[in-house]
Image (cartoon, rainbow, N blue to C red; front, side, top):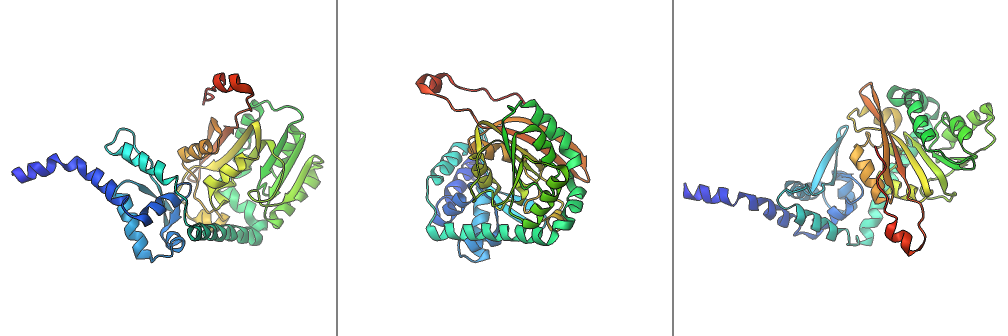
Length: 343
């Protein structure tokens, strides 16, 4: 009886012991570093670390038991992501300090190279889908979230921002160009980028039919190719096609002018895996907190959020993230604290 009481008295220390055990292995620390801004499946992590699947699964189990990683189901696949420290829970300060230290590490070059390979494989799968499915894509997309379902919400948010008459906009992944007429009416210059020649041709046909003289179409990779920064960057149902969404958001934020806006329309997290095959989705929507966390890490402020009702089991989130304006001089740096806009 005394032995049982003694064990119960020390049970809170078990969480700290698990945390210390999990952090006491170089491979596990590298896994945590790899999961800083991305999520990966077991097979992807096995490829990244050139380790057998069973070995990676063991290390992930240890990290999960310590509360350092969490899982997310994407259809039939399970993806691992880093878990954030939870408030006042025992070990939360150690947890947060560990992740802070891990983020200062540089991954070995060969590991970084294999991460790039995994991202390239994801991107290639997405491009292959659009190359063969451009003609039928819009019909498939309408089964999930077609433009008519969220157009008015995006336009209401866009019009509330009061862009100047000479402002510019960039739309990433315009699809068949359905939103381009709206942008053309509101901005002096509009640039539409797509890495699929087949999809861009559909957008070109739309521009010709609508006579959109102020819209430029460019076959380009929005993350790698060069194009000018804009006052407003728009992504409608596009982020879930990026191989690494958090990293993509960070790179796209650099294409927004100071004081400008990034508008994202996306699905909330869902479990309807048929969307992968039907629409080429790499990710089954996103948690609202994830988008906000990634945007903040990209140097953006979280602003208005609108949510469009469910249809066929899907919910749409329309998000506005703002890039802070440039400040000048030491006085501005001291007194220029901005409050987060009201939601």
